[in-house]
Length: 231
Image (cartoon, rainbow, N blue to C red; front, side):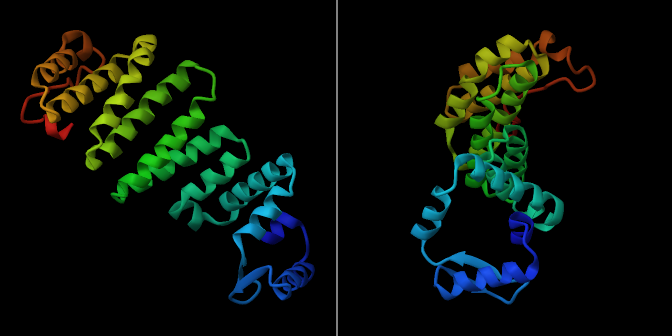
């Protein structure tokens, strides 16, 4: 990884790292060329990082993200949040969103719901910087649905409601029957869980209305009291 970033041959790189190690600026674990280096103090690391121009930092983050994708498939698969972080710091919003979503989905599949929430929220924060095109509005809806699913096992009903409330103007703009019906189902489930049965019934009727069902004739939504908790 370091060799790919600094553009030096193995001998020159090993010598430079040995000098940093002798100066007690970095620690080494393992033996070259598979050694892992880390700064001895966080302050030293931060000082070195801040000494770089922003454009140079972004360039390095971009190179790291691309090197990970090209040569470290195991890290990309097991820790996509690392790739997402470097794309974010590189200012490359679209691939950053892609990898935050991958990180969120992976965390959710492992029942690491707090991590999943954090990753999905990072994706949403970046998406808000993008123009409000139809594609981006659809992504904003889908990410909030994923966020809702990660918040549900944590019992975060207030945060779920806030996230769903943010969808009202987006869905009104999109006119998307599929996503609107899914939204209504999630609102039904939310109000049922917090004891607001009348509101739950209102949203259940919305999700089951003929107008909502036209978008998926082979799988019409059917919501009953017994299935609300599973939505």
